[in-house]
Length: 213
Image 1 (cartoon, rainbow, N blue to C red):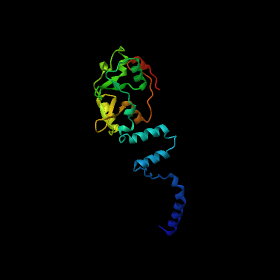
Image 2 (cartoon, rainbow, N blue to C red):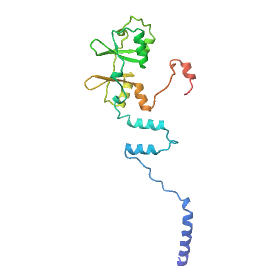
Image 3 (cartoon, rainbow, N blue to C red):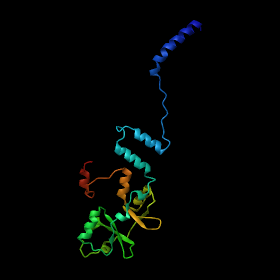
Image 4 (cartoon, rainbow, N blue to C red):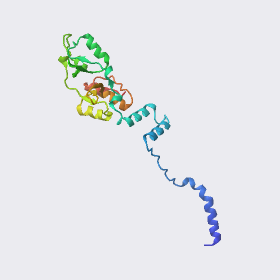
């Protein structure tokens, strides 16, 4: 091949090269992978709200800490719990106190001061309660416990395992320190309170016709 031809070829290649650049396959850039939770959180904070809303960010942040967060972080502390004594009469004042507390399950204590069972207000609604009836008459003796330092993941597993949605929280010395419900754990997992007033789950027609929220 003559030197002249090589010089001409070199000039042609030099002229074409920049013009063909946009048609060449681009080599993929290596994806950035956060190496810690802190780096991942930093990436989330930089993500535009058009991609991740504040609510979605909260859900992700909550999910990241779910396995490590202890029950004590979300439980209702003992000083805010509503207790019933097994000899209390279930008259209007007692029932009103229970309904206003906003829970469906309440611990019942005996003469020794220890928890002897639970009262379930949903079940009371379906019964004809007389003012002379004592809490002991409607006592559910099955009480489930969970320790305050157990994780929310452990709590969720316990709820599913026992099919119970109310746990008394204790410490390592077996002392009652609070209470936790399935709803509390679920709301923490979702990062928001669950709002649903639908109460006809036993009505097949109502369920079939129900619209999405």
